[in-house]
Length: 101
Image (tube, rainbow, N blue to C red; front, side, top):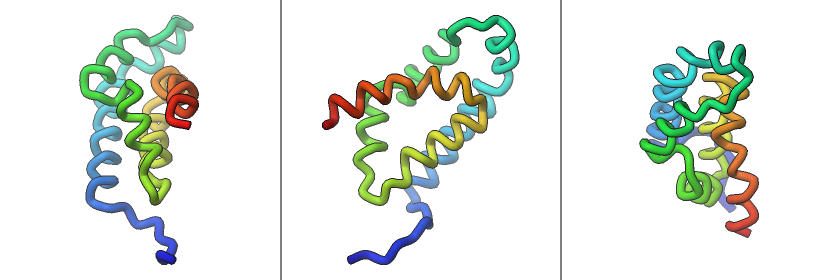
């Protein structure tokens, strides 16, 4: 049995940094505007899809991580950007979990 550790692998650290950059550069600058408009943030979702952050492939890969750290780390970074937009991006993960199962 492997020893329990919360240390991130190099790949997990790269994903963390990648998602953090997206949250910092794309989500945070427009989060207040989308919140005030009370509309779905289509432009942010389209940007996330362009880079591979929004979609079933990202969710399935993150959920298949045997350490269980990749998805929570990515979600933490997204939600640091904005919780509402994070939910808009990751809400499709509910369906991905069913597909994966």
